[in-house]
Image 1 (cartoon, rainbow, N blue to C red):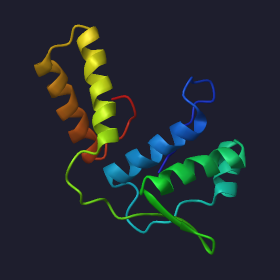
Image 2: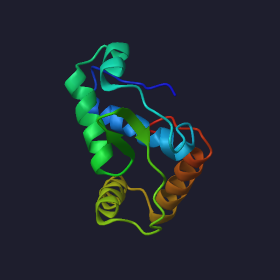
Image 3: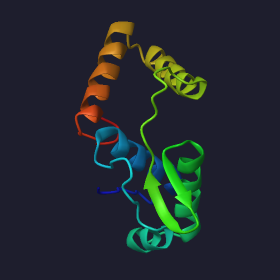
Length: 130
């Protein structure tokens, strides 16, 4: 999986990394049980600080997207089977809906973009910001 980081973006690098990995998991480019590079190796590959990678991995672990232990590297966790939207996810979606309303986008157009984006990611087209 190709990880795209923009060091000039307003979004912090650890958030960009987190988002890339979640998109990779959702699209199937990162499979359950697949090991991720060690934090040190990925930091070297991307040319960023080791602690930045560690922070992203810690967030991914606490959110349940990856598993980690001291003896092995991080691995992709099983997809959640909860089936319902968490409060945090609903809050993020509410903000997206509010921004759509503020930009004059009606409910049908917003729903269409959500559905299209969901299908693209599920189908493996993981370009962030589609």
